[in-house]
Every structure is written in C-alpha cells, then in structure tokens.
Length: 184
Image 1 (cartoon, rainbow, N blue to C red):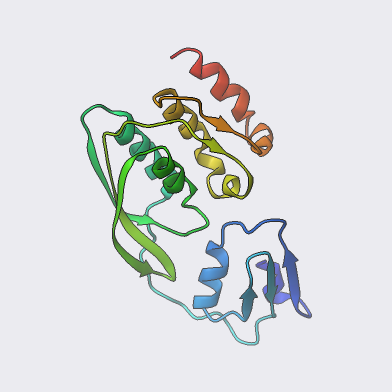
Image 2 (cartoon, rainbow, N blue to C red):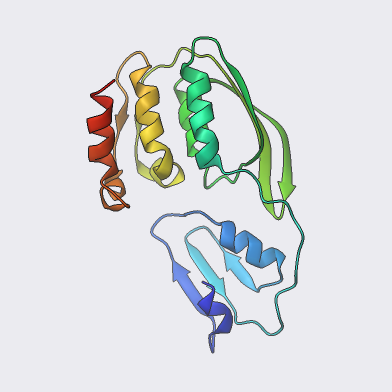
C-alpha cells in the first residue's frame, strides 16, 4: 500500500476478507487519496507530501487481551484497560469473550489519530464454551491462543475453526497451544 503512494497510476488491492485497516485510517488522516469498501482498496499516487499529524497511539488490544482473559477467568477480579485501541477490525476478542458470557463493559469511547479508542472493564465471569470460525477469525487471529485458555475455564466445549493461518506464523501456534494446554 505504501508503495502505491509513489506509483505511476492508481493502485488497487483486493482482499479476500476485510482485514486490519490501521494503515488506511492513518493515510487518510494524513491526506492520502484512498478509498476502501472493506474488501477493495484504491489508492492514488501522492500529488503533494503527506501532512504531519499529532496523535496518541492507543494501547494494543492484542496485549490487552491477556488482562481481559485473566480478569474473566480469575475468581475475584475487576480489571480496567484504559486507552485501548478499539478498531472494529481488531475487536473479535471482545465479541468472543462477550459470547462466552464475560462480564465486560466498554466505556469512554473516543477517537485518537482516526482510530477508535475505549476503556475496557472486565470482571470475574462464569464463561461458557462457544464455536468460533468464518469471518470472525481475522478479527482475533492473534488472540486465539488466549481464547483457548479461556475455553479451559468455560463450561461446555469451545471449538475454533478456520484458523489454519496459525500453523504458518512465526511458529505452529496450534501445535504449541495444544501442547501447552495439556500441561494445565
């Protein structure tokens, strides 16, 4: 996408499913001529330099997910994560925990640098197993190992499908999670 800013003509990218859109949001705020409908992104080359902007980088929801899962499974917890990025392309972990019955609230929603930000509160919860797959997976691919842990504390079965990408990340995360969960 960044190379498209300096191309001779329009750059068009097509995604199989909508994915994280942080770059698109930032480029738009900096003045890039960019359009997106979720699966199709078109970008015109720069006609002038991008403009400088000032904003606070929000907390990473993948990092916050450790605390959210810990708060949900702990028998006596109340945790607030402040200033967490709340981009809808990344909030699958929130939707999954809510579906599992987590006592989770979103507070103080706002924008920072063209990105949604919120405070997230989670409390001790009685989780139930769920089935995840399909279009939800890209929104929580990095949090699936944590959801597997949450599933260990849930009543009923937790099933995660369509996550083969985890086998080809930096390590085979499916094999690693399976191996480590057997130690619990």
